[in-house]
Amino acid sequence: QKEVEQNSGPLSVPEGAIASLNCTYSDRVSQSFFWYRQYSGKSPELIMSIYSNGDKEDGRFTAQLNKASQYVSLLIRDSQPSDSATYLCAVNLNAGGTSYGKLTFGQGTILTVHP
Amino acid sequence: ETGVTQSPTHLIKTRGQQVTLRCSSQSGHNTVSWYQQALGQGPQFIFQYYREEENGRGNFPPRFSGLQFPNYSSELNVNALELDDSALYLCASSPGQGNQPQHFGDGTRLSIL
Image (tube, rainbow over the protein chains, first blue to last red):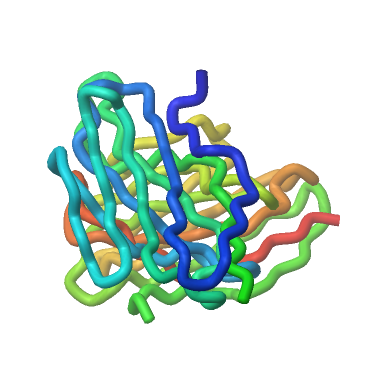
């Protein structure tokens, strides 16, 4: 089992729809979770961070965290063609009790929003 | 704009050579992490530097080494380059060594011939 796993893509949604991106992680005691957006040929850009169970909203983005199920998701409302990118889930896994900021990334989900 | 700058942007080397990549962290950030991203994959953690000390290391061989300077800028050195080292090398800075968000620079694209 991979330490951080994202739903297989690519994901294609029409403009204006809700895009739902999912991520599961292996370490039950992980504390911090991040979503990055990466356009083709560019570096990852942080779009959301979440630390507590529940929902966190920022504009059209909502991150949802369920530590009991070891699951984190990202919803994009009113999707736009400019949202087309690869979305990376990153987890600060607490493997071995270390507290340093090693991020473990999923393989990414390619999202395409078509007009 | 994250304020994290990396140089050079692109680099072409041959097998067996050595390379040094550079990173300037965002103002106020004392922690720098390095990642390797192969095509079509998520970034893989190489190591992290906090206040000039290596603070954690991923599953990379010793020929990958680094430094952090008093101004918190950092270098990644790779010796004895192999074809599989071809990747995008990303530097990320954060205001501390724990759970704070990390902000990436634009990366250095390294190609090994």
